[in-house]
Amino acid sequence: MTAMPAARPTPPATAYWIGFAVVVVLLIVAPLVLPPFWQRFATEILVWGLLAMSSDILIGYTGMVSFGHSAFFGLGMYGAATALLTVKPPSLGLALLYGLVAAGAAAVFVAYFATRLRDIYFAISTLVFSQIFYVIIFTWTEVTGGENGLTFSQPRLTIPGIWSDRFTPVTFHWFVLAVVVLSYLLVRRITQSPFGMVLQSIRENEPRTRAIGYHVERYKIVAVMLSGLFAGLSGVLYALQNKFAAPDFVFFVVSGEVVIFNVMGGMGTLVGPFAGAAFFLLLREGLSRFLTEYYLIPLGIIFIIMIIFLPQGLLGFLRRRLNT
Amino acid sequence: MPPGGTAQLPLVRVSNTTARSPILTTEALTVRFGGLAALTNVSLRVPAGEIRGIIGPNGAGKSTFFNCLTGVLRPTSGRIMFNGEDISGLPPYTISRKAIARSYQITNLLPGATALENVRIASQSRHHNWSMLRHHRAYRDVIDRARAVLADVGLAGKEDELAVNLSHGEQRNLEIGIALATEPKLLCLDEPTAGMSVAETHATVDLIRQIARDLTILIVEHDMEVVMGLAHTITVLNYGEVLAEGRPAEIQANPRVQEVYLKT
Image (cartoon, rainbow over all chains, first blue to last red; front, side, top):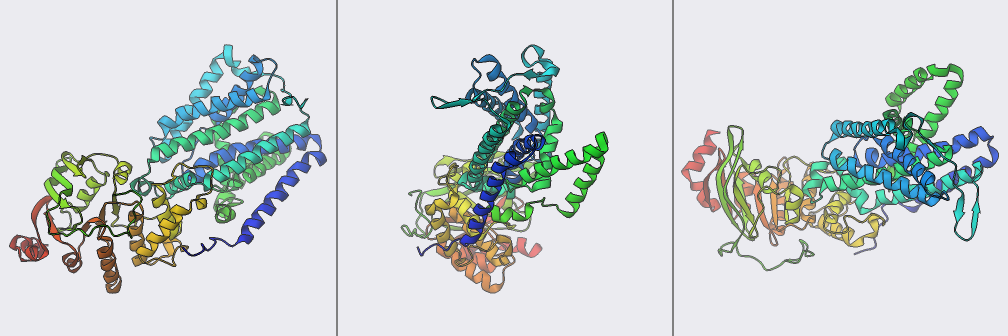
């Protein structure tokens, strides 16, 4: 074979990593310069962005729209709560582990049934499953605290034998940032791997993918499971930040917002969902200050205008470049 | 045959006249859609290495036959034996893994992906398909194989073109390349020259002759010149039944076949 001509010349890759480094540095510095309210807000954007990115694995890469991500997010929250309330001393590692196991198990369960269906039927079945989880959590008061949810105190950040300290808002932001950046790099790698290419092939042409020898349903189950795990991870982070787990976050409205973050930011880019989450949350914050509960009206109008004039989303134009 | 062997390695040239053990046999294959019989008692024996033409007027059941072979349709009754194994009713991905590939009548590509990626993903289905943590470009074996297949089907130099931007003839050849990349032993070609110019048709006929050295080929084709020139044996379907079977010259001289073709 002759030397393989590079599929793309190097400059875009360099530009990508420079852009990536700049954004990460800005996010590291952000909590040091922002006032407390916006400090917290920045952390929250990262958490919601991670949830939206997990959904992008399905929406953007596999071509399946999930309306059930609130369930995985919520189970991540309740899993973390369980670990922090039952194990003494409260351990950050166990909170992560319990949350991931709960969300992952729920995702496998939902995936096993939902991936037999396609398109809108898949979307609706994920919605139905997430509402089942919501009802269970809402009514099983002895275990889940019902309507009130569960409250707990934040675990300490511990590196065994070396260091242990309470979280401050700044160190917690950095902790979330580290988890989010590692998750992003991992998911990005997965989408570029042979497995990720199969997911994109399913999105482009499912019967063809089956005809060339791929057991499509099995790939979809694994995709939903991966997506559920990262959604659960964001749920754990959100629970840690707010020191509670509440049924409101299992409700399907959260799933709808996740889809909106993806559409606004740009599906199939992984960074788009973060941009979408930031844009949506900032807009909501800004509008609700002036309009109180009527903020949804202008928000809806802006969303419709964006769908008409920016159907690819804020970062959709980057899609080809980001996926090489 | 070793699974790693690709299309460009000529194995033993199989003479089409010797009665070899058949690679594909269908026994009384029948498909009914409600009350409509799409295929009735179709029994075929295709020896390994043969190019078998399947012709017949529109609605004769040719595509239904292919759909059964590749697992898209489940036969109502009857059996399909491939390499001595009953494959009737298996799902498409399993059949693909038994080394039966198909190219489509309607071009059926990943339109937004490059020519190389279309073939690469097919080639990858046999190697490293569950790998998650390495970049797909790190698997050079898959890429080299895909490039070799593209060169075989005359698309060298078009690797980085998007499939949608290829000409019609190139897309049809890419179809064949995708099928070849799955390392088949039996290749089902559904009207491979449909819509092609005369020059493109000639090139594709040459290409099919070349790949036929290592494969068994079933070919559905409307262009009589193409199919008469390529096929060793021709099976004529009419109303879902086998009307005639024989060498091209015999088929051309067969009065029942002539009648069917003159009628339509």
